[in-house]
Each structure stands twice: as C-alpha cells, then as structure tokens.
Amino acid sequence: MDFSIKFHEKTKHSAESVYGSTWSLDWDNRPFPFKVYPDLVPITLSEDYKIQEKSALDAISTNPEKSDKIRFNKQLLTTFLFFTGGISRVIKHPEHSFYMRTASATGALYPIELYVITQNFSDLENGVYHFSVGDFTLNQIRKGNYFKHLSNNCSESEIDVRSPLTLLYSSYAIRNSWKYRTRSYRHWFWDGGVMMANTIAIASAFNLQSKIITSFNDQALNKLCGLTDKQEAIIALISFNQDDIADLRTDKKNNFITNVPNIKLDSLKLAKKAYNFESIWDIHQKTSFLGREDLQKWNDDVNSCINFIKIKKPNKIIKSFSQIDVLDLEKTILQRGSTNRFKQEPIPKESFLLILKSANSGIPSDFLPNNESTFLDCYINVHDVMDVDSGSYHYDIANNTLSLLKPGNFRNETSQLCLGQQLFGSTNAIIFLLTNLEKIVHHFGDRAYRVAQLEGGIVSGKLYLSSYALKFGARGTTFFDDEVTKFFSPHANKKSVMTAVGIGIPDYKTKAGKKLKPVYTREKITQELINHLT
Image 1 (cartoon, one colour):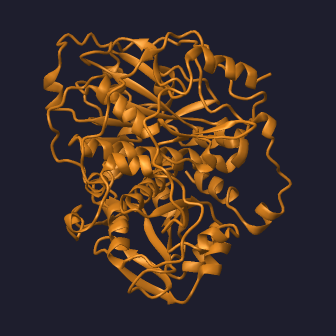
Image 2 (cartoon, one colour):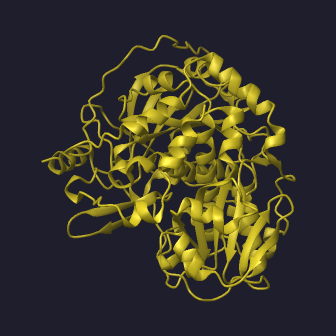
Image 3 (tube, one colour):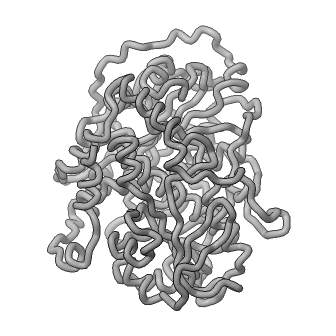
C-alpha cells in the first residue's frame, strides 16, 4: 500500500538532487510533439466552433446541477478538443518551432494525448477516436459502440451507457521523461489536470454536467484505445450528462460491443531512442486497477472518507462578477500563457480572493464524495496584494479567508523554494497546494497517489484560468519538496507538496492565441516525424 509514498520520497527535489545532478538534456533526441498514425485516414473536424459565451469565473467555479438539451455533433466535439488541447500559438526558432497549446504543460512538452468515445452523434460514426493535434483531425481507432464496455470497466454508475461522449486522457511517457526523468510521473497528472480544468469549464459554459473519472480498469481502457504497453497509458476520463442529452439520440439501436480484441496500430515512435525509466511503470502498475473488485473498493472508500476531507460551503463566489471586469471563457483560454516577467505593482485583495475562491470551488469527480470537497490545503506567500500584509498564509477554502502564519517579506525565500528561480519571488503571490499523502494513501491505497497529484493539476489549471480571466498572469513551477513543507510548518507538518503556481501582473503585453488553421497536413506531419528520427 505504501509503494506510492516511497516513490514520492525518492522523487523529491533537494539541493543535492538538483545542483549535484550530472544529467543533461539530449536535444538531438527531443521527442516529436505529435503522435502520428500514418496509415489511418484523417477525419476532418469542424471549422466553425466556439464556446458558448459565459463569464470565465462562472464557468470555472460551477458545475451545472442539470444539463441543457444540446445536440452532440462534430462542432461541439471540436470545441472541446481545441480548447482543451489544440494549438493556439506557434513560436518559430531556427532549429525547431514550438506549438503552444490552449492548456499549459510543464516544459511545454505536452505529454497528454486525447481520445474520444462517441455514440449517436448526428454527423460522426460511433467509435473510438484519437485527436490528432498537428493536423487537427480525428483518427478512428475502432468502429462501433463501446459505451457498455466503457461502463463495465469504470466505477459503478460513473458512465451511463447512454452518454453520447467521453474524453480519455493519456500520457505519452517519453515526452516528459526526456526532461524530468522518474519525477515525470507526477507531471502526467499535473499536465492532464490542467487540461481537464479547461474541459470542465467548457462543459459548464455550455451548461453541461461533466465528471472526472479516475476509477477504471487500466488494462481494459489502454487496450480499448490501442495503446502500447510501457509507452502510453490512460490517466483519467471525463464523461458528460447521462440523462436529458441521451434522450436526444438519433439512433435507438445501440448494438453495444463488449468483446474488444487486441489491435496493432502503426504509430510512429517519437524519438530516436527511448528512455526506459522502469520505476515510472512500476509505480503506474502499483497504482493500477484490474477488475470490478478494485473499482468497488474505491467507491466504498470514497463514501466512507468524509472525515478525511475538508468540506467546503456551496460553490458560490462571494462577490458578484458583474461588478468586476471578467473575460469570457473563450477569450480567457486564448489569452492564457505562462508569464515570464511580473510587474512590481500590487493586485487588489478582492481580485486575489476571487482567484483563490474560483480555483478552489470544487471538482466534479469520482474521487470526492461531492463537489464541495478537496484533498488539498492551500498555502500562500503573499508578496504584494493590496490590504494584505506580506507574509505566509493558510487559505481557508470554506470561508474564503486568509490566516497569517508568519509575517514578513519572503520574496527571497519563495525564490529558493522554487529551485532558486527569482521569477517566483517577483510574483504578487505564490500558491502551494499540499496534502497529507500518508493519510489518504492509508485510507484509499496507492491509487490515491494519482488522485492527489491530479487534483493538484486541476486546481493549478483553474488558478491559471482564474488569473487570466481577471487580466493577470500566472506560471507554474516545481519546488524543493521538503523545504516547502518545512517553511509552512508547523501548520503544514506531515503534508506533501503537489503543485505550485505563481500569480501576478505581467510586465509586458502579449497577443492572444488564435483558432489556428491546421499547422500540418497528414502527409507533411508524417514526413516531418520521419525526418526528425533520421
């Protein structure tokens, strides 16, 4: 049961592990940014798509109690795919270009792939699909209706067989292990969580219920998507409303497929040589679920863990958004970047608390008993916020208040906690998300390790969106694990850091991202990858 705790300890950053490391990046072996199936016929996506207009903070902080009746089609699917993980900016360099996505990723390496399972769309065949980001198309992995199979391999009642759409998020391991090595397993869930924050906000903007699912049969879903063992793995799913929308089906004969044969798909490798960090796959195997017994135990543990989780008040932002200038969600996602220089000016306390409240407003998921719960504690170093003294704080999620732990100007300390990066000492504030890993792993088992990291990623994504919605900036960072805990102790005693995000006012203006036309054709992207490997 404690395998994940030992893994976490071994992958902590310390001064010795960071400054004493002889590791250097092999730039000649940098993984290609796109997964390519050269033999599959690309299916075009919609050219006309947009998010329903809604205040970004409203979308980020609420999950509808009931869904509107909306027709599921390629246009809606395209909206979800682009604003979750599409290319919105291209930064060109002499050696290679960087394709920046609509959700941030550590090191701009984008390890997360998106898969789609559909049924009863008005303009798309039932099946399992892969989202090909580079040429902005779909690859059909399997034909037919697999929702019964999907439902059978997820926690009881988490996916209704009538659901029209489920998104699956996988990690293509080499993209992050190339840089972050064994610690990159954490990044699977950080980067996936940031993308999921976009997805659930988009669903909210359309007034669609969504739910993040982490309890599933790993082997069955990896097989369903045709993933290669020890190369790529599903980390979570998001399902959408299961009732009213299902009544709009155009095909009443589902013909569910439950027998799923092995398939061998020809996808090109992403790098000249592999980085086989066996400890990554060891921890993934130890945290995997293999059958109904594992899924049922998870459900039982979630329902019995109320005392382990801080219960928040209902998901309502304290101040009316109408009194504050807030971008809509689409503009927020397109504007979002990763701030690399902060202006030394204060931000209003009201805006700061709105960011915190919006980001910590609950997550619709199968790992929390309701949308008003969390595994995370929020610790903050405040550097420059109006009417808030500089110092270290604990944020009371339920009451949207800050409790001073110790006063002082901790800009230098913040920089040191963030691996000596002065950028984070220049922020208006930095938020560290911590949890008592031992407590939740002892209750749930090793699977909880994934969930804790994933929730950290989701809340980080919501911090990004909330900051940019109010026209501020944000940037995620890594950290010296034990030093952060020590800095916020005794309050943070026995807690472990999941993620950290600095927020503030950018010291420059950037152009918003765009709904770009496909950067490649299938033929060109295939040739680019072949050239990359030679």
